[in-house]
Length: 236
Image 1 (cartoon, rainbow, N blue to C red):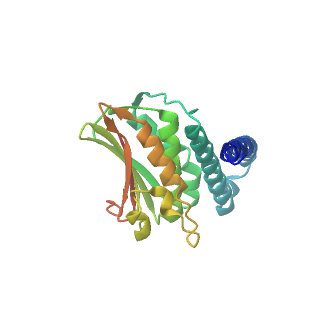
Image 2 (image 1 turned 180 degrees about the vertical axis):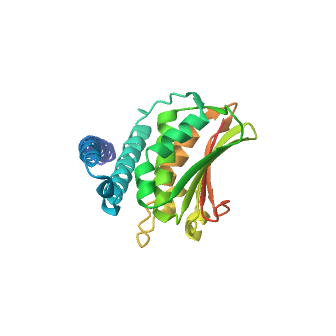
Image 3 (image 1 turned 90 degrees about the horizontal axis):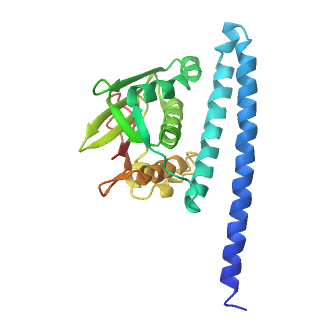
């Protein structure tokens, strides 16, 4: 009987994880419907109401919650090997433009300037656009939370790897988070409200991108050109 107990516990844990994943999926769908309904309603509002602080808060928190649900689902699928990598050739400038456009209303409501720089015209990447966008979108959302006036996206090639960087002019990452870069899941800080989930998810997605024995990675620092924090994802 004792020999069977660990196996039964594993089955119960897997079953519970499946229930949680299914619930998260339903929550994400419901939130998506709410976001669509809100966008349709906001489009009919006068300009002075559509650009209000309250509208910005609703959009920001909705996107933040949606991002967390996407990450939780993604981590579950990674755990059960159900998150396939589907890389394609992507023009980085188009990718950046689309990423910023999704946050345009929030940026305007908070009077934050969003911009991007690409090292060379026509710079291309080969990565899973949907997965990487979920990482970049989450970082942009966090940067909006801490930025004072500006957020900037940059891209260049370094050691045959595409580097995508998101920086802001906020106060930067706290030192404990910088010190925990070797194990992002340890970045949980209840007092600051940081779960470390976004960085852990970003690291796992980066790792999925591999070429010629080189594995993708992420890095954070406070060496931003804007004076605040900078997040980088390296894609071989």
